[in-house]
Length: 71
Image (cartoon, rainbow, N blue to C red; front, side, top):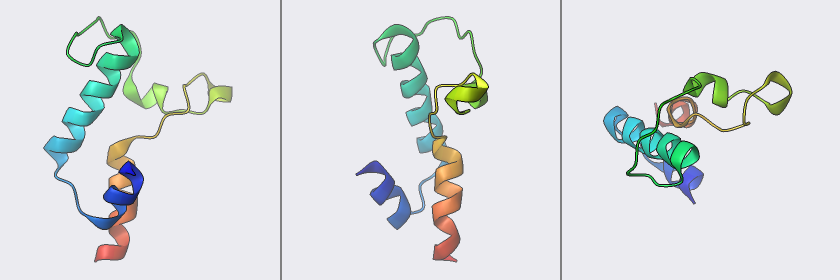
């Protein structure tokens, strides 16, 4: 549902950064509001499993890619 919504609308960068921050907090601590020490960069977490990442999608890259058809 998130990917469908991102493909329809151009999301503001600050909203995407806030969502990614919540995702990182949830992965590291289990709670989106509780911050833990960041031990790995977000770009590294978005790498495939074979390259040492968690195979997550970056919302900023996804937003940029889906917005190409809007222009």
